[in-house]
Every structure is written in C-alpha cells, then in structure tokens.
Image: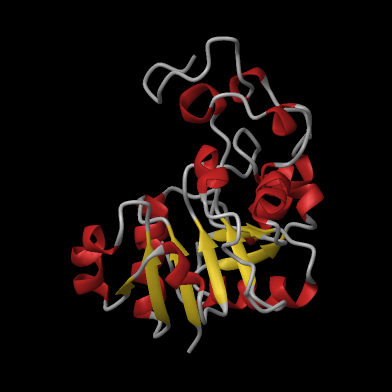
Length: 232
C-alpha cells in the first residue's frame, strides 16, 4: 500500500482517486475549495478529504492535477518539509488559447512539466496527461490483455519513474518510458500520442514521430485565453 496525496479533484483527479483507492492505496485528496467540498468523493471512494498541505504530509507520492495556470497559486512552501524521495506526478497540460493564457517560459520553449517543476521547486514525473479522464476511469485492463492502453511516462529520476510506471501498470495500463522531462514535449497536447488511446507499440511509434515545435493551435495569441468552446 502506498500513501498518495492528490491535489486537484477535477476529472483526472477524481478518476485517479477512484483508481488508487480501488487498488488498495491510502489516498488523501485536496482542492482549492477545501475538504468540505470533497465529502461526496471521500464517501464514495474511502479517500480522506484534506487540505492541500495535509495531502502532502506523509505521502509517498503526490499528484498535482490542477489547471496549469493555477500551479503558481499553490503554497510556495508546500514541499519545504517533504522528504527528498517524495515522488511528484504532474498531469497538467498547457491550454493557452482555451484556459491558461500565455505562460512566457512555455511559449519560449520550456516543456510544460519543466515549468511545473520549476514552479514547485521539485522534480516531477509526467504521466496521465494524454488520456481523457473517462477513458482513464474505465479503460484499464489486466496486464497482457489485448488492446491494453499504454501511457507515456517521462521523468529524470530512474527510481521515481520506475515506481510511477509500476503504479500505472497496477491500475490497468502499460507504462512506456518516454524519456526525460526535457523530452516530455513528446506527450504534450498536439503531439501524436495525445488523446489517442494507443497500445504499447503505438505509443512508442507516436513518441518517435513527435516534433518539438509547438503548433499555432497550442500557442497563445494576443487575445488569449478564450474558453474551450471558443479558443482565442
């Protein structure tokens, strides 16, 4: 059993709360609205509703799954007392035209997770960002079953990445090593692997075909942001 803190209770955060508790892990889930807003999810899953700070305390793994433009709003000392071997998972995606507006370092070429790591002051492992939440919730299959969806996992720490890949496998997906955080552009929005529910061979092929240039659909404009119905 692993102690997991989840910061964010939206579509991905909710799905991971359900999947990790079903797998027998001890989960604390937090959001910006406070524990009282999480009573239904906690009752459904057995997870503990927590503050953001409490979700980090005592955790072996912390998942940050919030809108990218809200990452700077997290407490600056959130990980100050955390052990060096705490694993931080980043699921966030940059949606400049739909939600986030322009984030200058990313527009200048930083990977999304590289920017998140800098903002958090901690290394991160990138995973769960390229799959729709509904498919994450219901798409897991036993290891070896035909059509098992594969998920790319990027990170710099070999041991941390291995632990996260084992967790991905446990909840029903084939983990594929996608390289370092500097290479995590291969799984960002607009890449061939994004939202495609590929198998292991398909993910490897898509990662190899990815290009580092951010296309106009995934760059901010002077009018950004709009919304998901009317990107600007």
